[in-house]
Amino acid sequence: MGIYSEYLDKHLGLEELNRERKLQLGIISKIRERDVLVYAADSNKANMAPVGLDNSDLLPINDQLSNLNGKSIDVLLETGGGRGETAEDVVRLLYLKYESVAFIVPGMAKSAGTIMAMGGDEILMEPGSSSLGPIDAQIQWEGKVFSAEAFLKGLESIKDEVASTNSLNRAYIPILQRISPGEIQHAENALAFAKVLVTKWLREHKFKNWLTHRTHNPGTPVTDGEREARAKEIADKLCNHSEWLSHGRSIKLSDLVGIGLEITDYGQTPALADAIRRYHVLLQMTFETTNMYKIVEMAGSQIYRFALSQQIQVAVPSGFPFPQPAVPVQPGLQRPPLVPGVAPAGAVVQFVCNKCKKVHKLQADFDHQRPLQPGTERFPGNDILVCDQCQTSHNLLALRRQLELQTKRKVAQ
Image (cartoon, rainbow, N blue to C red; front, side):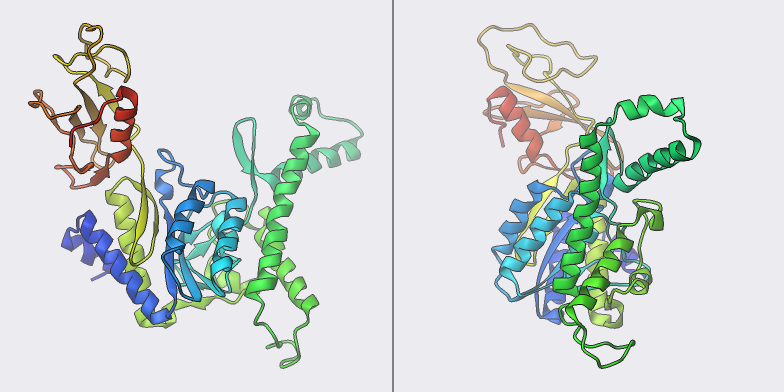
């Protein structure tokens, strides 16, 4: 039986998933004899939450690092990408505390995640399941996000066409009129930033123990110039949009070895591979069955971020005084007559489960609980709503805080 099927048969709830994940982190730490930190984001929730690596991640990462005290660390990484500048800041944080940093990639670490992985002394992956991605700087222009290199090559193509034909195709004129020199410089800077950073990290960290040649002139010393040249060659390949064609392309272990990187195949250590695979399955199950979109955790503590469903509507049910439109009214419901000077006694929140799409009508009473209105269920006192149809857990803490902020009243627990 596969690991996923094994855990599915156990029908694990949120607390059990959390406990099992922590158990596997402890096993990984024991086998590797290193601290272990997880940074994971659910790319499948990109339409409902800020899943990309950004500066808001620095505080929880730094907070979790403060709970650790070893000399070396493994960072288990799962991300679709984000800001390259934040990746730089995270790696700097790690080396301020640790002498040795390694990155474990059981699933994917794309774009900025790949930049981060290049900052490690060691990268652990497994053939088939693990993948990095092109370090293809993305820029935004006129509301669209696309490759900086593709942008610059498109301009270069227009320039070459003009040079060869001695004329400018009129179709290009509206496009060129909207491009400023500053935007061209921004694209060039974005492209250069990734290459320079990756080259530096490979030379300083990944190649620091590359002291003698193994294939070409075996046994002879490796010079600083040779480390620099190899690092630049790899950075150029990873940053070459034309090489990979797609920003979402998966670069596997064998691809990385083929361009000159040494990758540790954790599949060669059965006990370690089992713990990493189990953690990754449990991580995916946690994302699938809850509205968590980011997890920063270690074996003994954690910080979770939850996304609110985009299908949330709030209304004041019949009989609840409502002096002002502090929260939106659900379409189809009538707002009761306003009672000047009377604060709202409660609200009904319509929450749609993001897995089975069941609509939950939650009654949130302010100050103290009141009898339930027909067709509603109580806003959960611990802020965790477990869908009675599919057993998915939803954390409603952010929603409760939103209600309390808008109405200036406390939701009764």
